[in-house]
Image (cartoon, rainbow, N blue to C red; front, side, top):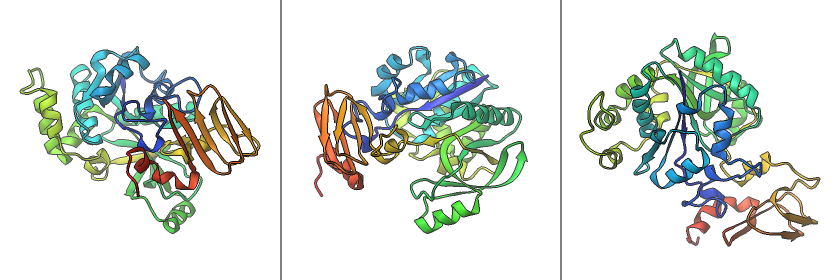
Length: 346
């Protein structure tokens, strides 16, 4: 059976005031389409995974939000992290729990806050990846076909075709400088790392045992085979090494593959990426909410709580309002939002 693990523990500080630690971006209708990002994530896996095989790993303070937004998910499939330990412990916990219910599981791991506009193409790629990993001791990661020399993403270097659209991964590359990113784009075999990957439960657990043995040891105590945990999740989970699944496993495993994906993907990591995904008016403004613009251009505006917003004469600004908090800043200065939201001053 296919299972989908949604990682939903981030706090989305770059989208303040829209996203806050109490209610982060994965639980917000950030595109103004009537569905939150985590709901859109569930939607795109319809037909690939039954409702009862979805899992969400999130911070314990977001459990009620998950229940409210995804009422079809079994309550036992909401794994509440008592502490943030990055993605390797998150994925490991899900893997150990899934094995308790399905020893032949085929698993997709995905972030909750990405946007994919071409859902049909995405489903076809996921089905091909699941078909490959069902019979192979391999990991398949989605590699997004780049359309620009991007310095904000890690890259996957692909090489020979193994089967169908599945390529062998030659290497993972860190976020490059602009010149290197241009070289990657020209080479044609470098893809953006979307952080969406597929493997069967045996490969998942064996890989963590081999490459992240400390985490595997914690999981054996926390989710023992047919036994009672020696200590509680609250005691054990925070002792896991704090490391990403990329560093812990992906970059070390000898059989990692990729499928090039042209699916109109974005990680929605900042206001710039949101502006790219919103429908724009004739002056390149992207808006969500009741907004009237006069002599404005190149702006991104999100004011879902306000009754009405009127803006005049702005060029290249971010405007956001939520719960009485207002942000107005130049798009070129958005890297400073995190410090402003925390009350720090440069």
